[in-house]
Image (cartoon, rainbow, N blue to C red):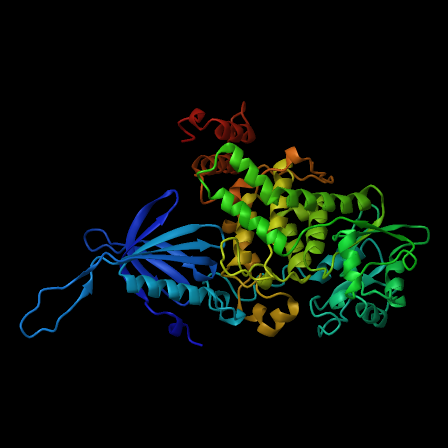
Length: 574
């Protein structure tokens, strides 16, 4: 397939671009294989126009078109000319709803041009072949292809654990991805368990996702494992190797907790179709706790309803609060934080090891294990540590980004596999950053950038569904890493939290309903003006970097004053 076959009209003049909060701009619209460009009309003295829009077409979630036909007319004809009937003043409007929740409107002269542009964007945004996506064509001058792909090797993480205990080892039994197609080549497993035992245990777990180490708690030596559900089935099958694997994790007399992210009823129904749970009789040292977390269609519908409510400017206060409640997004945030806190509490306060799983072990399982580590480990709250966590617990652990982030909140094509699990994780991390403003080294801008790149990116970091697919597509050989870009010194400064102060303690968030807030920086990013917030953050960053904060007023208090009363800012702040 050639991209040129999908582009019916490549260039249109005199297109009017409109976007909420910005003045409309008229210019020339161009479609390339991966981008939509709009260059404003040039100024005087032959000056070139300015590029006002540079939109990655993969970012388009929905295309809506409306055409207007204002009638027909016949131009004057000579004796020799044929009769000519044309459309008078025909035009069209295309609304582009993007995966990052931005909404753009293009007014295009000419009905045929409008329909061709809309058809071209729809076709290009629907290209599903990974190797045809923009990261395979993007070649920035200041980055090398190999940069960033090996910043967070699992071996490095294992070495940190190996300095504290010899009870775990790094196994490469999955180097050919035959034991588990969604696990990485290397996994951390109990040192006393052989690879052959692990292979047999894998056959007893859905998708081969046998229990592997997710986190080692350095303070007390407890561990957090993750896996998929056991395949006990209606006949309550057993697997001695799986029982040995989990039994090895606990010493005699110790207890552990299995946190199942399904309801007890859902787990019981899964047993009827071949899945199930670990029976108490076979795993006597493990106690099962059910903490149901939504995934799949219900979570996607919640996301869609929230975005619809945020975009409805006609809502009264009562109606807004009613729709905010009915979409249940904040309830999902609360449930995720509560379950992560439970896992962290089991390890830190109960001094008990934890196994987390749901059904497949690629969605809510990773949500809980990753969040629990942000709560427990100050290293995961640094810029580099957080990136390593995402690489280890989301990307390499097999979260199917290609399926889950195929569509966002606006798409008219309802795919069964889409679900904003990663967005829910980022929202929970934002809640932590709001409740503990000094404890995370990175700020909201990093979370927004991660959300944008998970859905549409210049980089290959979030491509495919697992490491096996990335190897087959040669993603690491042919695309740039997002981490390489983020860690450039000038770029990294944009994402740092100027209020950060290393906090070695566990951060226990409040999960009371009053404490969970709507993430306005994401859901209202393109709706409400952020001028004063941006100016306050920039001023605070300047004061911290230059160490010029006035003696009587800290950067934090100046930020608070700017947010509460923009008119009270000094002339220098303006």
